[in-house]
Length: 324
Image (tube, rainbow, N blue to C red; front, side, top):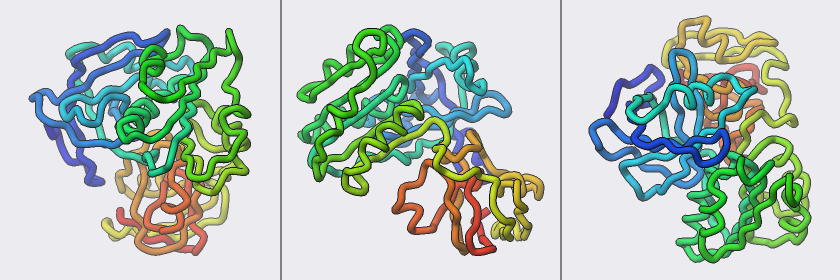
């Protein structure tokens, strides 16, 4: 099952597409298994995998199946006309019998403990939410789902979410009943309740604004695009970076990222979004104070200072030592 170990010590797996089906207009669900039929690495609700699509394309897709299924990973992919080529590749090239390389799974959208849960999903953002709801239902906690999209035909797994058990499911279609009613969903502050939201940036921004009165840590979001509130990744003064494993010291000047400087010095870094939203380039920090500019790491992870996303984040201390 293991193809090779890449230079940054992440294991790349070779997978086979065993099922493919349309689950909404422009959305396909794929079932992925090891060619030998062996067990796949375990994962938890909210996790995603990286698919290596061709020579220069690595993209992230949330796992939307059952974590207890040790042999099959499931993803659902929306074909994005304005995307960067990943969804087009999946839709046009990955059919039953195709093989594809994968990294992960990784989880920066982990389900935390809470007394009850509010899930908010927009469009393809339903994918990481599905296994979260299943786990919440199994644990016996109270939950509700607010799921919105342009029209019912474009919304994946609508039938599935409406049969999810004891929770309260509200489906919003812009063509019929408008956008998600955030005043109804979040208007009453409920201490101990966890809010999970995934979807397009306008929805996440609106949810963050509406939840500003909730206790700190109540809201957890997963973004598909960079948070506009973060400063531009390349702005700011230059600094020194030490790549500990390679024994290289270099200067990251204004207007350049750590990733770019690393690659100039022959240090291989796997990247994908280059916007601080996917987590692919997360790197261990051995020394230095990080200027975090990503949309992935939690406040706790940032506070620990133990890792950073080197595609956008920079340095506040003038010098960083990285495990590269």
